[in-house]
Length: 317
Image (cartoon, rainbow, N blue to C red):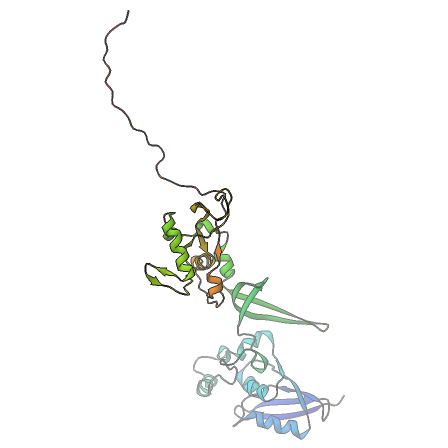
């Protein structure tokens, strides 16, 4: 079987770049695009056009920069895949890894820069894909983020047309879900809202939420989303005709936003959510659902002792 083989000399080091195809006008592979003077890519394009060839891939025999230097600019001009042995893959992004410190090749690379191998400012996709570079990774389960970190491709396996990718992920495994863990709402600290259950405090919570005057100051449109609120809920046996209510029907309740804020803050996170900060959500409360309100006191027993004097009068007959 006859092959079309064209040589393009990479003049800086005098290495050979090969273009191999079954015939004119066919697909071809480019082997070892090294360092040209001034630009090997234009020389490769010239040979491709001369035979109407369509490059399908780049093959790298080994990872030294005199065989890989023009990979990135060539794939930018003609998008195609690049194949290199697994042991040398890291050299595409770290060409100094195969060089002795201070050698001629290292001096050349330092002079011209490593941007010919990888553009760090661009996304790690397409022609700029580099398997040795990690990519941002976020994992969701049931639309809940459980992981945020980085993903790195370890190996690609092609078997009878099926492609499998072996990857590893690094980061803060679990994230918010792990930080919350098995914590309970009762562990949150709401002691700042300890208050007396009085008619005055009940009315004041209504005034803050409805925008009427509080201590002579109008607070129109103010929905704090924090603190206590005393909603009117019919718990039973607290009204005769349902228009005269005992104050015990107004039990203390917390705003939903206050609870969410404390859950996230205690887990060491912050959030930015327009919905949580909307007036609609800030008015949402979580009512008290206990059967009865209990009164706790540190006073367990109070007993007053009376002093008495007893006199022994001897035996009684």
